[in-house]
Structures are given as C-alpha cells and as structure tokens.
Length: 277
Image (cartoon, rainbow, N blue to C red; front, side, top):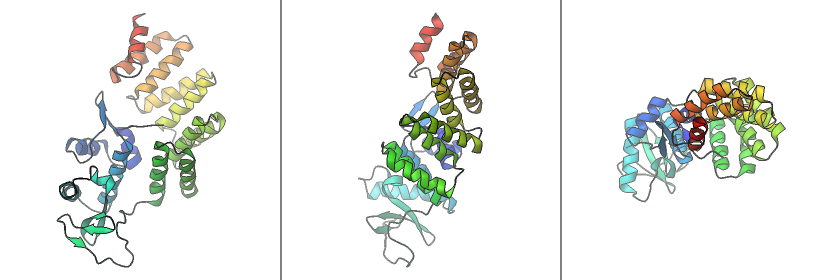
C-alpha cells in the first residue's frame, strides 16, 4: 500500500504540472508531507486537495480566489485544519462558496440560502465521473479496504477499459492477494494502453524477478528507470537483478545512482556496505 506520492505521481494522477505543485507547496496552498532528496512527497489528503483545486481551476476560478476561500475558512473555522478536504468549495453563480453542514457561505461569511432546484447544499465541485470513482477507489485502497477498492476500480473500467492507472492498481491488489498471474495480466494490459507507464513496468519486473525470469525483469526495470531516471527504487532493484546475473559492474552503477537520488533511503546503508566490498 502506497502512503506517499511524489510530485511526479501527483502531476500524473491529478493533471497539474510539477511547477504548479512546487509553487503551491512553496506558497502554502497545499503543503507537502515530506521532502526527500529534493523530491516533494504528498499524502492522500493532499492528493484530494490537488484534485479540488484542479476542478475549480477547470471551472475558471483563479488561484487567488481559491486561496481567499482557504484563508477565510482558516480564519472563521479554526477547527478546520485542511480546508480543501474538510469542507467543499463550490461555485454558486459567479462566486466560489464554502459548503459546510448543509450551509453555504461566501468567503466574507455571508450565508447563502437560496439554492437553485438542481443544486444541493454542500455539493462538491462536479468532477469527471471516471476520475471521481478512481479517487474513491484510491481512498479505499489507502485505508486497506481492498474489497471496496476493487469494486470501485472495476466500475472505473466499466466506463473506461483503458484507464491505465486503474489497471495497475487492480494488479497491485491481485499481487497483494498472492495472485501473481492475475496481477501480471493487469500490468500487461496497462502497458498495452501506456507502454511508458513507470509503475506498470516496475511492478511487472517485480513479478518476473520473483519467477526468476531475470532477463525480462531487467528489461522492464530498465524501462521504468528510462521513463523516470529519478526513480530510486527502480535503480536499486535493477542493480540487484544485474548482480544476480553476474553483471556487477552495471549493478554498481545503478546502486550509485540510487545513493545519489536517495542518500538516506531504506537501502542506502546496505548499498554503501556493498559498494565498499
């Protein structure tokens, strides 16, 4: 189960640029959870916040107006620690409003009570149905509710059979359940849709390594780090497989890259010992 998402993953999942992510983190609109080797890491709450901001931007709302709403929530509702996820920001006419407990307020604290017939109090900004389902599934997966996550992912596929991230995540659930053949099928389907998908290449390589199919494991690990040269774990695993195949020279090269990318990482001390031998 993945707990944190890199800025690159947030960019891919939400559809905002990495420069926007860095700027919003720097200005405090959406703060990173951690920072490792220059890479910003975000938890699922932040991921939802990014989606909220993206949905509002798509509706033509400026970042300045979004920030004003967030500041208003913090000022008027100090018990709310994460305004972008604990309350809904919706559009009412030409105004962005704050939705809380079936009530709506302007950023200035004025209550709005006249709703049009098609609107419901507290309704979130409409988002694409498929992506909304995907985020609901992702949320269930993040809390370990695998059964609910799988059901929601399947609903995503019923709407979009080529949703690569959903195919990868279903593969992860199958892998978690020790059903490697089914996991492989999902990963290969994802790669048919998107041959450059970093996680699909990496996870398929994991399965092939477990099966001792080292030649193909190297192929897919290599593809994962080719698509994302800063993918530290990809370099670590690629190095381990290369060593198993007797190619210690190239293995050491990838281990050094790992240490450059993540000098305090899980495998850093282990690799320093290996490289000293």
